[in-house]
Length: 315
Image 1: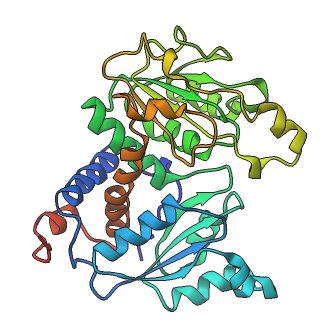
Image 2: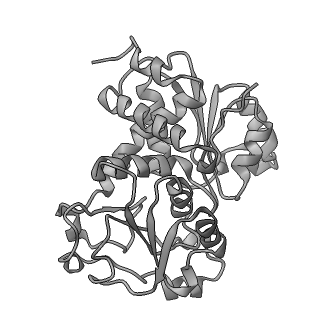
């Protein structure tokens, strides 16, 4: 049987990404349906989450599915010693699809290899976050009118930031030019720079973050320095406030420029920016509903034609 799991955005071709973005557009037109009536979606979150978990659960509910799962692993049999394999196999008995976030890199890949139902990776450690990438791509396409030939500035925690790692992988199809802005301690890992070289993706690195540095950006993608990824808290304290985007840094910004952030925001974007035309991070989070509706349906074998011809739309 075909494995329809989504573990890594690298598994999707350019055509498949555009296909899913078109499906997300259909769901934005009509998000409330019964196309998943009778289906059960399990959300297993071994790490804290607000937006990802709630948007997946809202996506499922708005499509008529029922949702089971947990947001705190302390309330599961994992505290009794149950293995991830046993948890996945047991939940597969009850659900048609599993959405999983886990603190271990590679956990989603492992789950997809043993589960009899599709697995959607909602983030595995510092590795990948493909559903976030789909909503990022949807947001970029909506605001720029294209995914092609864009200047994308990635700022902050590029070492542990799984969202930026996934975005680089997905954008390989669209001839981007990346600018990596980070302190030495949080610089983009060599693996991803080698990946850019292999794929012919242009990139520049700098530690400077000012109005001149970001003047040519189409997208500024801010990231949070993730305390939970550090084993040395002194190192975290040194870098936690490395980069703050201030409103007075935007006076040279392009008119089309938009600021994205996977959220939660801690101290990366000045609050006064929220009211400017450049801020798009809250709309970006809203777009997650439509992108995740598309991902759930695709994993369950529902096609774009099925969505376009759906007779269960609730107006």
